[in-house]
Image 1 (cartoon, one colour):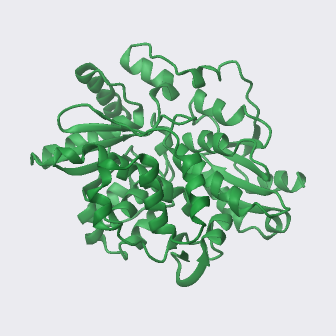
Image 2 (tube, rainbow, N blue to C red; image 1 turned 180 degrees about the vertical axis):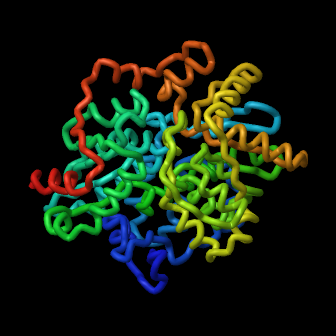
Length: 435
């Protein structure tokens, strides 16, 4: 498998180099030189395959011979060890529940796969590998859980102060050992900018072996494509074309879905469902991309004003907006509309959405109102367990919800995080002083 930079299609690097370095020096993002279609026989037999068998086939298709087959099988076995069920909400809409992993968020799939892959690539190296990751909520918890106590790897997580839920914060600040939390007095975009600047900082490069676990790393996107195939398998028997509605912030999740479509997954349309941080829906509507500072919302994991993976979407479609519009449409909603949807889905169907999933559900409804054909079935991604947003969900529904054991256990744990101003030089000095 070879990869190039979105800023230089002539560049060629191995999967190991792309994963371990995260970003090319030209500030682009790595993309596979080819995303081949899976054979038709794979789709004919899809209902007979386990989730792990699907994941292995998809990974092998993209990664080719980058890893020995036995190693890839072991990585899949360790990483994809929990289900991704589609729960039927109505006769036209299902919820793809991606919160059955250890941190109860969709990013468990990518983080666990990445930790196994990096551990393999780092197996013969003497230097400690330092993972830098910015989080708007769930990435931090998933990465902390995925890399916790992994030999030869440490993780430094940057998160925006006061802009993640209490349980999300506990997940990334209470583990200790090889997990360090940095609380930044700024936004997710500020945290993400610090991580990107650190990768290009020669002083840090001299002192650290750095990589990232954000979706800027291609190792996050490959496994996130797996559950689109798994979801399609579960509804294939309905005989309808499938629409995926993807709550979107940094746009890694929907990029993985678009990669799945390029591999042959028969998806009618993807919906980019966002909160008022609407730069991509605006682009799809007006043809103008205008990044701007992020706006805080109750769907905090999507509070991203300049999504990194947008350049990958442009690259997939050769910067052709008409081609992008054929596969993707965008909708956005304010907090009041998000709360209305959470209440209506719970009242009418007895299903509890988190604020991000509610936006995905509402976007599907709006899309179906504009496209009333009976041959469509919609799947929205429920990206995190509602209990991770306990105060918002309970206040909105006026109901108490059950907290899963792995989240309830966090209540008595003590937060450990270093507070920083929104100042890269301060963060840089912190890292240099640790050496």
